[in-house]
Amino acid sequence: MKVKTLLPAGKSLHGMLATHYTKLKSLIHDLEESRFSGYLKLEFWEYEGYLIFDTGIVVQGYERDHEVLNSGVKALLNIEKKFQEKDGSISTYTVDSEFVPFLFGKFENTIVTELANINQEDLIAFIDDARESLEMGFIDIVFGQNRMWASIYLMNSKVAAVATKNSEGKERFEKGKSLLYDKVIKMAGTIENKVSLKKCGALKSYEDSQNFHQIFDLIDLSDFAMLVIKRLMSFMEAAPSDISPQTYISELWKLCCNETGIKTVEFENSQFIGLENTTLTDFGYLISKVLEKLKPVFDDMTKKYSFMDQIIYSYKKNKEFLSNPGLLTNIHYFKGLKIK
Image (cartoon, rainbow, N blue to C red; front, side):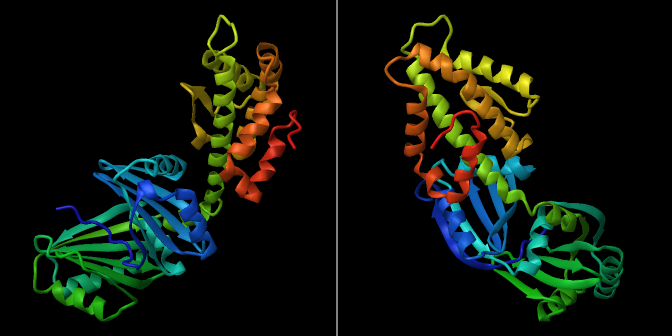
């Protein structure tokens, strides 16, 4: 029987929002404004996506798709795509900021020890040994045949909190060595159990993820770049040519990748592949090179509409991109175009 780690129960802020009525960026903006700490959970059949927030900033993303776990930029990009599908549900839960690292630990842990049917005295000794040996971790317990689950949170040589969930799905969460902690200890002496000690590297992951939210600027820039490229291709379709616009731009993209030395992102089948491996600056610079080379070709092929007309039109159409003043700074990445 697999012993799972319980998330802090948290306070429900949004419950069962529907994906086809909810915009991810708008919801994240609202959570940023309220300096939200906790997690957003996205659910489909055999799929779960999580975004972890600390005082309004998205610091990490995870997804579990048919038992395959992804994290970081890859998870975030997939979560964004899932938000565009129907029949998904979204919930958000507020958690005290001090417990945000444990949200990382839920997904980033390694099993150290597994035991079965230990009594009350042995469990207390086991907890004491674990909290002294681990900087951060969990002791996860399942009682009986899924009668109750418990997770004891350990940090800095202390019992930080306890979370429980019963067979009916009712969850509880209390800080420190509380009455709930005492209840878990007493149950160990009266019912069969399985115990799992898990070590977490979540504190370092938490520190490394403070700039994770910047990936949203990269996604916005990629959405805008794709809008521009697709519009340019639609006008190039009407011009006589021996090569299709999509093939031409794909080859042009490869050429610019070689010239700039930025080979982390590919353009294939009208989509960007490899965004999780690049930075906002590198990606923006690569786009600028592609558009600089494309401008004279486009102007030669289409006399009715200028290249710059289409760039400006795309900016006006992309209202979400324009509505965020911070993202307008990305204009300078299109260096040779002088867009105003």
